[in-house]
View 1 (cartoon, protein in one colour):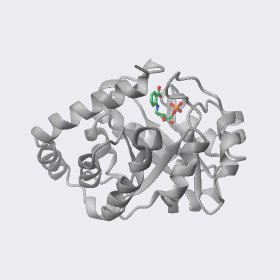
View 2 (cartoon, rainbow, N blue to C red):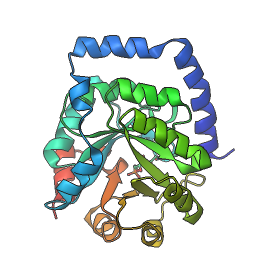
View 3 (tube, rainbow, N blue to C red):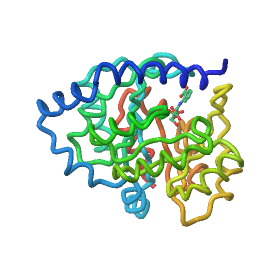
View 4 (cartoon, helix red, strand yellow):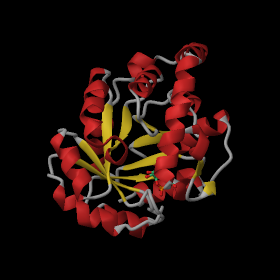
Length: 266
Ligand SMILES: O=C(O)c1ccccc1NCC(=O)[C@H](O)[C@H](O)COP(=O)(O)O
């Protein structure tokens, strides 16, 4: 079984457990104790932020990613660290923060998203969404956008987009090839991601963005994802898309604020 299939199979089992445990109740209590105005934060829009930042800086969505199947452990972090990392990313000039919430393979957590939610920055809930229940969670914890993967949802992705819209969530619709782009375009997705990482082999090929971006009309917001390590990689990717999603290289950095600042500077 390839990595993506394994992640998705495990995620489906975990979600059934989360439903049985009524995890939404626990998340609500945690939010209450943090005194965060979720309704106010939910008004932030990732799409708007990308467009606005693009005029002055490189619009980068920085990712809080403690571990991954390709890298293993990237940075061991607790909730206080998450808060500090989110602050450093914002001070460095990111246009949005992506937060991994998948626990088994990425060591992510819904609680990581909630503690970063104190800041006024659009937040993308990065998970392997296979069930509407996860969209309910994203909405409860104040995410502004969610990731929907064509490789996981196929043609069903339209229903997930509609349900996300009903919940006032923007969607980053992720694609890896021409067929997936056709599906994304058929659904009317507004923000389309191109992942440079082959999720079966985990190999990175930055030229995926160059090959696929011209297939997406320019009235869409295009995001190049994965494998961006330095300014040269970023400048190459931003020749074809509006924004870039960067995780590992920022998380591995000793000084996150400086690294984000260096990348975000035009
Ligand atoms: O990152 C992985 O190893 C991975 C493996 C299997 C499925 C998804 C995976 N990553 C998800 C992502 O799309 C990235 O976290 C994101 O684009 C940032 O990538 P990077 O800058 O290369 O960490």
